[in-house]
Length: 288
DNA sequence: AAATGACACAACCGCCGATGA
DNA sequence: ATCATCGGCGGTTGTGTCATT
Image (cartoon, rainbow, N blue to C red; front, top):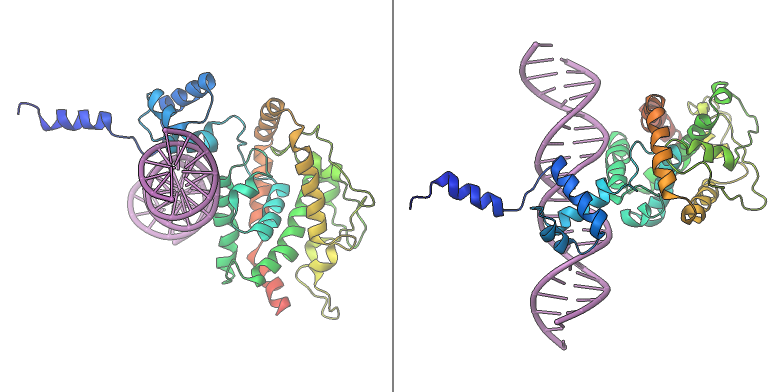
């Protein structure tokens, strides 16, 4: 045998399937192939494209990363609310949930749930699947996210702490918030009849000093609608208009907008996902 | 400045249902 | 009817980055 070990192993490597992170060259190859031949038939694609990857790997790379329809950047408050609501309905049906968040992949949503939501449950020593934790999400988290969405939509107004005032939370304002990488601003959000405004109270009252009141503060935040109504409202608009938007405009426009606002948004995002555990604890203790 | 830990996200794995030969 | 293949899904692991000590 004159063939050295390194030679044989290198020829083996040539035939072996690659694993691990994709290189730029592989990305380019896959993108180029799909631009010419379209996606699908992944095993065939893997062979014909010259990529030393499995069809599955190619599919995953395309769907989760390379596909221009994939939205980059942090999840907006509305998207987070949608995820929470849809997860409460469907559980870990990530792909089903992802179908209702244009540009978001099941993988991304799954990661979000595991790294953000389940983390909070762990910190609270609660089973993330427990009804107790679901209640915390519904009563504490969702109103906060909605509040955050409204604040982002109109920062100056939000800067003022408004106690016990009726604040019209228009769907338009929520859609404005969507400029931050969610949905195109030109999408007309639909407003079902008779749902023109939502009563929102300042949510900073979590550290309940209202010992005389038997109401849980968060419950009173939505007097006109309960949370599920609100989510349905948002969700319907989101979903119905899903078919209407121009994907190309969306990708260019919102991505640029998202990048432009990345700095502020990051800060908001951190605040969104990590509102103090103190507050969560207080909320939890209040319930008990 | 280095070591360590936590976190976020990309990628892989195994299973399952659909489809076609 | 059976088997093989493929694509999709959810769970899990690997890895790079950032923060903390």
